[in-house]
Length: 144
Image (cartoon, rainbow, N blue to C red; front, side, top):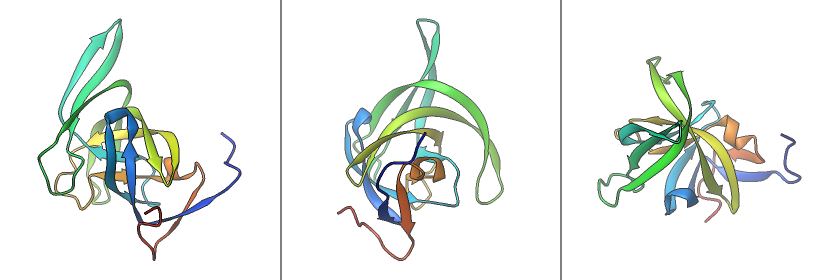
């Protein structure tokens, strides 16, 4: 994929939207040290529809809150072993999701994981950031 014409500078944490999930904003960490993006997901189950495997899962978009959960269904792209920053390896479901960051909507692969105890329930990794973003680690919420 060719890079966008204009590169946007983003902070290390930003508000993003998940339009396909009906989530207007969620706090995300933009992590250049992570290859893939990850979202906190629970109640994960596989659903076969028309011969294709889908994943149904719930998300809590608001940090430190277990209220206002959203149920999401997405086509299963893959199952991958992902190693966390602590070195722990676990198999995760991989789906494709639209993410709106600083006014740009991009489609990216997202792994489903238990991030409930993490500082951010949504992590945007390098694969997504390659779509026209540079992260300024000294700044936050440049998109408003």
